Length: 98
Image (cartoon, rainbow, N blue to C red):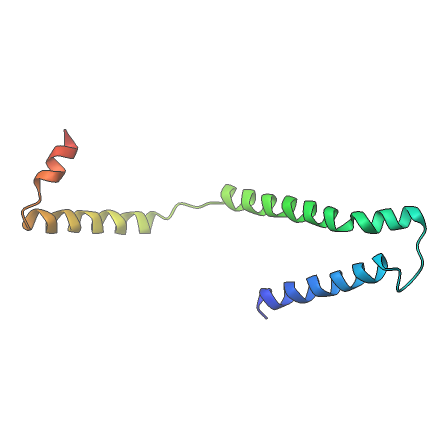
């Protein structure tokens, strides 16, 4: 299953439960319970931000070098330079080397 519909389903179900609690459709809440329910969207947003930062940080830590892709890119750059030199634009690269 794709993750998009799964996340959308979880978000919809969570929003429905929160709305039912907020409007006190399911059970009546005490004033302190109403304050907790009112703060849940902000807490969910903070949790999502922390989860996102953690996921991005872990992926950056686990970043692996792609040596094969780097070698292929260098070969393509060399081929492009040779092609430009063959077309008479080789002086551009000589100016960069100085």
